Image (cartoon, rainbow, N blue to C red; front, side):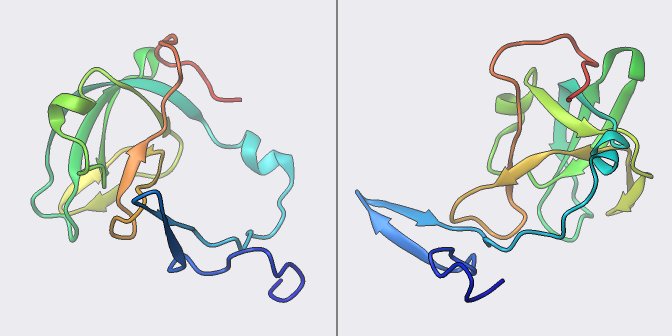
Length: 143
């Protein structure tokens, strides 16, 4: 893909300073195209954060987030959301992938994947949550 689109930035390390802010650009490389059926297989739902605590044994600084997904249950996730305080996250709605196999992170079973986006200028993997603009029913499916 390099060379075909010279206007695309292909390194997350490239940045610029404008109006006193540092803008960091993520990779413009796009993963291979997949069929829509791949997206349809993911069970992405809205939950509400019940509690947040440190995940002290995780390799990188992380939070253990407990989220209520309504009829889909209360689940825990180890997430790199540490730019946010527990108070800031508690009560917020988040999106999570519910049908990935649990993954052990720092001795804790992470039962769903919390969806987030990279925080500009932060360490790789440091994220902020993806959330609906208005409160929606807990357990609602992303489509």
